[in-house]
Image 1 (cartoon, rainbow, N blue to C red):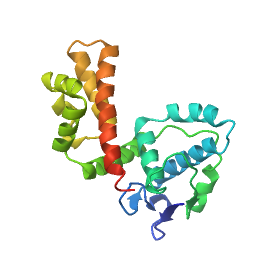
Image 2: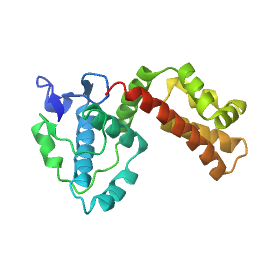
Image 3: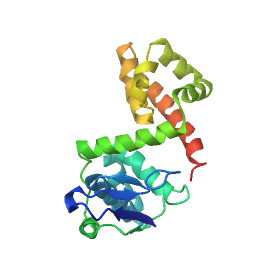
Length: 212
């Protein structure tokens, strides 16, 4: 079960929602808009899993349409409340009453820029708790030495980790852009950046397993 606990003293439009969204942390305060969007994503996730026969069709419609930040936070949200597992239906409890009107929406609109920024901030908080840049560089140097050495050689490391942005999707996009700037074609740049991203995600998974 997943709790959505509402602060009741503030006016409805300004009430924050307390949600356990990150592994290893107690509930964090989210804006109402961000909590509602996460709630709607959870309902669509549950809907996909509710049919054995139609699961693949439903998932193919739902998952690719989500922004990377939405996918990342939903995975963390479910695993934080499900013993580290993703892929099993979860029940939301104590959600604000007006959230119930969004349970059966046929689709979920992409996150607004404001909600996406709040999701980004939560991801940044999560990744910063798991490791620092030095730990990540040591891991990448061992796990994908060719791709990492190329990124360092073209000066792509600083942009990839600028402002403490350690999330895999940011690192992938920044690395890909730098490889293209330095002469790689789009396919080759994507392959190199994706390899770095994949190993960074693997690094985080090993850290997250200890938190769930």
